[in-house]
Length: 237
Image (cartoon, rainbow, N blue to C red; front, side, top):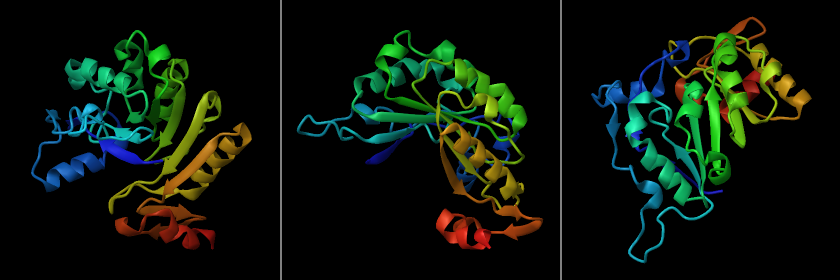
């Protein structure tokens, strides 16, 4: 499947401990930008742009990673939300995926025809520890979303997801990519993987943490070597 990125908004606000080493904030600092300033970007209407032939620039069947430079459910962008939902509805031939730490807002900001007109929207809820899993995932379970995922990244403590896997299509786990990042123990990853296997739910191990623990041994991995292929040999030993 072809993929593209649609970032109509840039900027966010930290709301939980998982945000401590936010990659968006890190990128903003490198470019001298204020992370807490919410701004519209040049990609605002990207999904519905057309070329000179009158064809959509984004081809049908594309997976659109949506609002990855912010949080799609951020309060600050409610003034633009009607436009976003309208563009997503118009491009029902695409798949839109957004991640959020603010799933409790979903029912209040979704369009009235969400269930009938937005089956092509996939939502992933980020949880970094058990506290946030218990806080956020009940909202995800109740929401009328056809395609639901749980994103345990950065995973900074053990999480039991067994109560929250009904209706979930995918669970993603990954560590914190920062030299000062918090430790992720591979036993936590394995426990979540086993829960997914038992529940017949797809599981994806995205990356190790810069500081990853296995059987009491701490592995420090450079951020540019955190991909699965780069470290899987180490952690199979």
